[in-house]
Length: 238
Length: 320
Image (cartoon, rainbow over all chains, first blue to last red; front, side, top):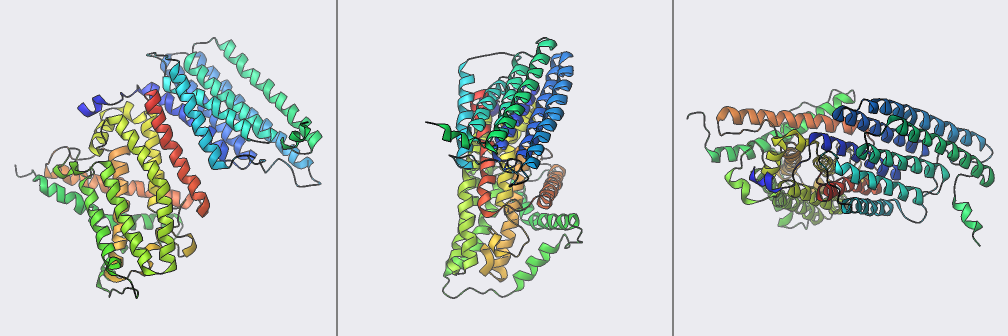
């Protein structure tokens, strides 16, 4: 036991469990880099959102906040069911509309462009490390906060940025944005679990606005450029 | 006092358990895999019959091969018989010889064995054996960093890099099991084990298609008792890696806490039971995924690397 005492002390079961779920969210974010089909990316987004709901239930159970059960249910209904369905229908419609040529956008993700997959993942690892360091540098100490989960949520946000920057099609940029929102809800659950329910729900419905905006953006872009790729936009530069 | 075994006997039993049980575990996995595919499959004891048959056969060496070709299988088997001395196979307390090497020492001996087999394969001049050896070395160059990071995680958690210390830490409380660093390290190690034992996302274990082969192609030119030693060695390697994953990371329960004969006997049964359970999981994975293309294997291993690196991050920066 003397050896164990000299080592890094283990977190409590609650904080360890919260960190594991947060890690699942981060791994799902990394998994999105690997997906070659937008459909799979949407599915991964649903998995990630489901993990957030599980975390909400865990926090609710441990800290006795019954409001959070409602939030978990609402968040699951919205992010696991409705948003993926909307995205999928939108993309399917686009795939059918391009009947004259090869259906654009539905199957292929316009490649990452400048960097190969392995390099992108390495870059994302470096960015995630920066997220860990920066959250660590804030010097927050608390007996009740699962701090590792907080650091991971910062990494999730940063890695989602990398995903949005590296991807060249509007649809997976939109999913990158939505998963960024997942990272922020993760941080919110960890830091401010006791927030009034009405505020949390309001934030959740902001997401719907984002989905509508992205839907509009995708449709307009597709109408103008006949593809989902944003690579065509670079030719507008002077 | 009659029930207490002398410590040297337990030490020998550790090695004997691995050596004797290893082909049986391979047999069980092959059987389960066949049943999952709707075939009847070979007998569980088939690997023992194979070994017995090969040991009776004549040994041939390719023309021009030097003594290294014949010495390598013996050396590799000796390496695999040494490693069980270093890891907790049967007891939760450290045996006298258990402290002669840490996890790095065990890893070094395992890679020495695979190096010997690779040298023997390149002695032969046979294209397939050389191809297997060069591929195995290429991919182990990528799995080594993963193993290193897993060891860093162990070292950060326990303050030592002795496998016994980590097993004791894991047993100490539930919070040690759910801590993210531990889960990440265990998952990364499991992926490395899949790669090292030539299981499906990396290599078809039972196939005869030479182009996809990595580990399996290396002993192509060996025959008779030497081939038997290589086959036995690779099943021992598999059981050793399973033992490290099970008794150090995932399920270090059922180990003998004293030198009493019943406790040690129970530990042998528990180890074999756990290894079979893990083998069934591996067989299910074997049947549910497709083999990766050769150039995609780096992505599989880099996923393991990601897990191990995140493990170190959470531990070093977050205390997870």
